[in-house]
Amino acid sequence: MVDENAATTSSIIRQNIFTYFNLIFAIISLLLIIAGSFKSLTFLPVIIINIIIGIAQQMRSKKVLDQLDVISKSSYQVIRDGKYQSIPIDDLVLDDIILLDKGRQIPADASVIDMNRF
Image: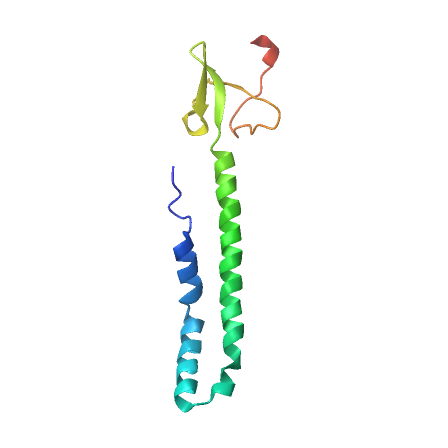
């Protein structure tokens, strides 16, 4: 299952470069270049650094979210119809008996029963 809301690398770059404020700064820069006032362009490095920092932060966040997505899409060992099966979390149904190990996530709507019965 692919998350349609997840940002791609190219969309993150586009969102950080093509902003309203960057358009204003580009117009001001163009006008300063036409006027020959190159000393007044000292704000450009700040804008470029701001864009780079924004892209880096969003890319790092994307990486963490992608790792969390992989963790949450684990499969479980279940007893279904008297047989042991490995089932993805999305395919769990009512009355599946989930076999859990240490550190495994428990689905939110699960009931914990005594494992010694099985």
